[in-house]
Image: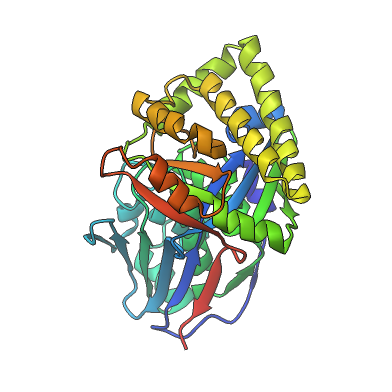
Length: 385
């Protein structure tokens, strides 16, 4: 649980009872360096990942809201993509005991209550008594994501950040962005999902950033912002495009393969991890220069690096899509672990969405093309008036 020591909160005035605290977040695109943030690789070799915080078709797709309620229990509402909602009531401490089982309904939200230290678990004090004595009642927490499952856009880690942010704010705790990033890392450690740190860096921090860490424990993630010109911002918004491939990825299987290959110390894999980090810093420099063609080249290099680490990350249908786009783009990647989900491309010509739609006009109907807008704010938290 090494991330815990980099989390710092301080008391602040909590909002009144029954007032919603709402956090909304962009998604993120990993543009270069992913997998170098993944344990155990990042512990042993350090990491560097460049991410962009993005809106899809002008919308921030991830969010959470929380309010204090008079009844001393925890009410969870998880909105699903089909507008169906899952309701979970936690009335006793044993209702939280599956917080470290990622497959259990609401596990991430339960783990967030423990990670954010709103609830002590295990404890000899009942859940109702804990909530009543500290907060004068309980909590109602809602979460949502408008992204498809397995999107590769960092949804679960960004959502975890939104949840922790609203829990802290609702319970009267102030924090900085670095603490929030490390709190998500801590949450995923206690949730036992073993994720990396780049997703929350990309979705909780506005604009384009490179997250980086040194090898060793405790793991501390630093974030360096990329100051891009207005011209580069306009080109990003005009020429970066997301395509939902309609294919479900198997991130867990890909992760297992990457970790196995790393532990086997296959020389090609070890060299590739070093090259991942170098390519991320090259991409960082290209953004500073405003060189879209060089950024695309870094993306192509990154995609080859991803394929070397996880051989199953490029389904045949995705390769066909990439082949069709190749003449029209500077670079392209599957986001996240690969294997499906979203494809990100940067087009050579303006009006990227139109370019991509025209290039893919002969493909199946369940493919969707999204306009990408750089989100400059990152996570925002607002209290109901």
